[in-house]
Length: 258
Ligand SMILES: Nc1ncnc2c1ncn2[C@@H]1O[C@H](COP(=O)(O)OP(=O)(O)OP(=O)(O)O)[C@@H](O)[C@H]1O
Ligand SMILES: [Mg+2]
Image (cartoon, rainbow, N blue to C red; front, side, top):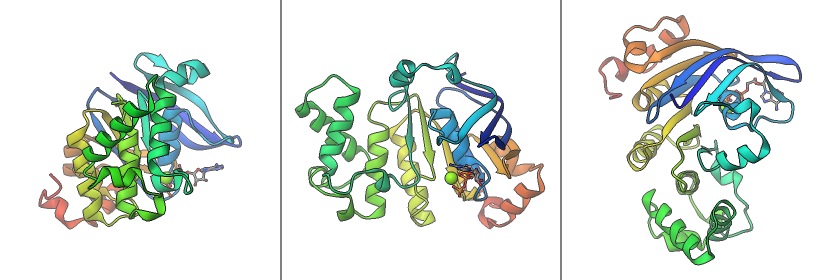
């Protein structure tokens, strides 16, 4: 087992916002988390990466990654794991980047701070990662600023960076929410082809969630209302909320999600 959350509560300013989360993820397995805005999806995956906002804290439970409770990680242990073994694709990777520094310089800096390597090899590695994510003309992208790229291209840059060190666990917070659903599905399908990492993918769209995950979790108001194998959840949803979400996606009945 790569990751296990048991009875995890997360509070902001001492108010419990996420309550009693349990989940398990094996190596190579994919989990989708779906739920309405404010249900706690981002909070959960931030806790897994140990990057909750200052007001946030895991107040109960355990998060076991690779046999160790990450809640007890020292800064040194985090440095080894974060960005390398566990990495994250943020809601808008473009916003995460510096608008006045060329993408190439940022990418090279990212690689050289994580790995003992020279700029030339870092450049080559970055170009290779960009072409893996199907960005046309990667050298050009390296020489561009974020505002010169489309939302989809920026997203691909974010993905390229996140998978550079072949993470064991990839957390994707609505990797493509700014994009239309077809582009979303396309990008994440490509992502699945180029990485064997375990993944947790957060999305608003249960159709996208169903297409991507081996497992599906549905959150509502800080609680997990549904969790199980995707096929089983779709065939036999337990929570009313899951049923409502599923009924809004007609193609799921016809198994177009597969
Ligand atoms: N920095 C913060 N300080 C205080 N409360 C917060 C903070 N961030 C989130 N919250 C609270 O936690 C709740 C869950 O937020 P979270 O961002 O995890 O939801 P989400 O499911 O990711 O929503 P969305 O789909 O809009 O991204 C929010 O409704 C808010 O009340
Ligand atoms: Mg969120």
